[in-house]
Amino acid sequence: MSTEKVDTWMDSYDNPMKKVVQAMRKVIMADERVTEDIKWQAPTFMYKGNIASFFPRSKKHASLMFHKGAEIPGVFPNLEGDGKESRSFKVASLDDLEAKKDELTAIVNAWCALRDGG
Image (cartoon, rainbow, N blue to C red):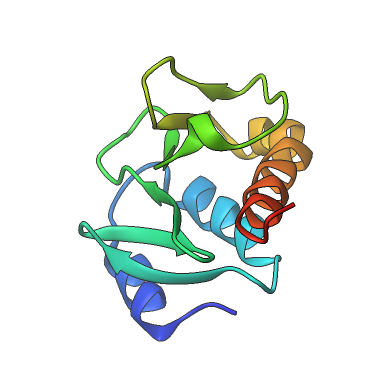
């Protein structure tokens, strides 16, 4: 379920990637376990901890930072990064999201399963 706070943030979000960000939000929020809020001045998704936040200044792609992405079990080719904790997921267009939608859904599912102990 989306929140009014994030709806309000989206209403004022002026960025060429706005439609992609909105579409990614819809994919993530399709999982009923996930909640959202504004943290760090951006939409952030949560389930038993922070899952990911948008990087709102990105104008060439929608960029979603998975705070503890290195801990998410599974193989996700579009979950980028080699740091100790975070990973990013970038989407360049609505067509690109369509191609990556199943992977984004699987990442969210894997996070929730991990947080549930399984």
